[in-house]
Amino acid sequence: MSLMDKSPKKYNVIIIGGGPAGLSAGIYTARARLKSLLIERGAIGGQILNTEWVENYPGFPDGVSGIDLTEAMHKQAEKFGLETLLADVTGVKLTDVQKTVETSEDSYAAQAVIIASGSERQKLGIPGEAEYTGKGVSYCATCDGAFFRDKPVAVVGGGNAAITEALELTKFASDITVIHRRDELRATKILQEKAFTEPKIKILWDSVVDEITGDTFVKKVKVSNVKTKKKSTLNVAGVFMAVGFKPNTEYLKGAIKLDKNNAIITDDKMATNVPGVFAVGDIRSGSIRQVISATGDGAVAAVNAEKYITGL
Ligand SMILES: Cc1cc2nc3c(=O)[nH]c(=O)nc-3n(C[C@H](O)[C@H](O)[C@H](O)COP(=O)(O)OP(=O)(O)OC[C@H]3O[C@@H](n4cnc5c(N)ncnc54)[C@H](O)[C@@H]3O)c2cc1C
Image (cartoon, rainbow, N blue to C red):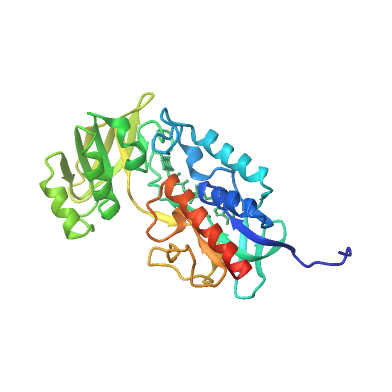
């Protein structure tokens, strides 16, 4: 290549995002001897770095830290030859046979692209939320519910996610207060019926959380009624935020078919509507947003990306 040659560096596969989904895709593509590049804009490991202890990933009966788990995945992928680039993916051109991924650093080309850029959990932005995240404030009942055995908790939200979280928490918590800013739930009727008949669940209507307080761990939530303006305080050990997800799909700018929540639609091969482009993990429509599903998706996409490239 001459010094004037600006053609992008070529790979067989580019993986966007270095969480569990991207890392496991990388283990499989690199091990299949496909020249593979993983691009991550933050820290390698993804969202699971935000939790101290993962208790539901198979193979770790005593649990494992998110850092140790994903460091091991990264080491394993690099052992097989995965290249890693720390850069922000800012755009993509996916229609040609050689697909281009633009980053804050440079442009890169590949025959297949695996999108693994995850979803952000929507934050309320209230005082105490950031401070107590991991110390009573949680965004995932499946992940953290078991830490609240026989303790009172609150769930914030009124959609399917909030009611599903509240129902999941009935297995552990002593009682669950769903704090919802409207006077009716947005969740499907069947979920509403389950919530209304569940003795552990109480709903605090027309209410918003103003602040979360505590000492080392959460102790209280301060709540306001949006109609009466009356303020109250609940004693809780945990607050589960279920106010939605924001898939990291901005850089795709219409290149891929998304669902109404901006999550990527895939088939059972993790293929998107664009040939040679796959999506895995939390960014995928219908994902259960767990490490186990993210890693499984990564393997499925990698095997199918290899088939796409080799034509077998
Ligand atoms: C506090 C917390 C606790 C959790 N606990 C558990 C648990 O106990 N068990 C469990 O199974 N799951 C748990 N989860 C869920 C789990 O973390 C996710 O399901 C999993 O990380 C999803 O993996 P992913 O690779 O799809 O996405 P992510 O982990 O979100 O990784 C996506 C990566 O893509 C990167 N990225 C995004 N946009 C770009 C871009 N434009 N350019 C480059 N890179 C980009 C991000 O920086 C990120 O690193 C928890 C989540 C949280 C937040």
